[in-house]
Amino acid sequence: MFDVNEIRKDFPILAEEAHAGVPLVYLDSAASSQKPTAVIDAMNNYYRRYNANVHRGIHRLSEDATNAYEDARRRVSEFIHSPSPEQVILVRNATEGMNLLAYTWGIANLRPGDEVLTTEMEHHANIVPWQMICEMTGATLRYVSFTEDGLLDMDALPDLLTEKTKLFAFTAASNVFGTINPVKELVAKAHAVGALTAVDAAQSVPHSIVDVQDLNCDFLVFSSHKMCGPTGMGVLYGKRELLEAMPPFMGGGDMIRRVSMEKSTWNDLPYKFEAGTPSIAEGIGLGAAVDYLNQVGMDNIHHHEQLITRYALEAMSEVPGLKIMGPKQAELRGGLVSFTVDGLHPHDIAQLLDGDGIAVRAGHHCAMPLHKKLGIGASARASFYLHTTTEEVDLLVASLHRARKVFRL
Image 1 (spheres, one colour):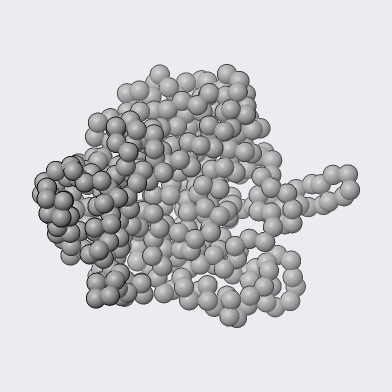
Image 2: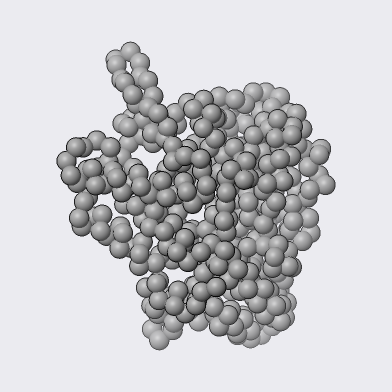
């Protein structure tokens, strides 16, 4: 384990005030994590000391930038236990990674009569691209439902996951329920019927050890900004034979081997999918974030979040009228708690909490189908990370009690 108070010193924003005289309590890490000094310094160092484009220059600045950028790719590859860095495609975010997959593999492989399977607990990034591609190709999109306690309905799988299924795209951890899905089991079930798998790991890679080889998933996406890294950077991992068979996503510089007036040929992996100047500083920042998380220890982070989540589930249950969404057991969920309070709109909850310096998320969390099935328009969400303390959870609960008094509930 680690000393959370020492960890907090690594994040300069946590020393800021939300309002004059009101300390910041940041409980919105599921939306975007805060950045440690090591990440900020790594990006500043690039801009100050070796700012140049990558892959295209032979002068010292370009070579230093290229080495730093590609070293970051290598560290990301090791972080998720990819067989090689060439299988790590650097994109803008998890959403772009899923769209890249949909518009390359999807268009090339889906036909009328084929099915894509996803779940009702998905982020829009793992629903909308497949809706669009199924409309373009004539394939059918189907959904696995969830149970009353926010778990994936495993009993429904045999009727949905069939020989017609070409791809099963699902989240490793729900950004609303917090539910941790049995990824390895789901991958095995998909492969048993001949389907490929695409895992949305945006809410799992930042919080626990992810080994793509052990999971045996075919594709996996995640975002830098949720794992102490900068915005504008994400990852698509894929099995080599699948990536090599996929056509490029965009055309332009870096993704070509040869261009003539008549035709072009494509570069090797991973560059075939990385047209144009990349987000160089952001890639270097992601590499620094990986180093930081490794230094703290992913097992330590997961254990700390489990303790905080268990504490929050118990403390928040004491607020009258508060309903917690998702599994009741901390071990079945990640470090977040979505909830509603009778008589209070989630947006009012978030605004009143902000007055106490507490940052939470309110809305549908890019999961409108999930909320519609539950018969609600929105929810509030408190999400935790390695720097969250039990004292911050206590402040959240106290502020929720005050919010009820404001509305005379």
